[in-house]
Image (cartoon, rainbow, N blue to C red; front, side, top):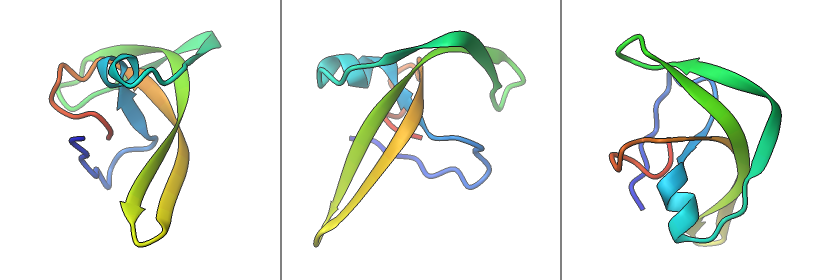
Length: 77
C-alpha cells in the first residue's frame, strides 16, 4: 500500500482502483462533491469508503475516505 500523508489535505482520500482490488465496498453520495487538487483541477467525488489502516503494534486507524482516481500514484492520501 502506498500512503501519502498530506498535512494540507482537508479530508482522507482513497484510490478507486485500490478499493476494487481489495473488494472494499463504497457508499454513493446523494450529492456529488468536487475537490480542488494541487494543479487547480476539480476532481469529482461521488462515493466514500470506510477503511481501516493497521500500523502494527496494536495501532489501527478507522476513517471514512472520499473515493477518487489517483492514477496509481497513491492508494491512500
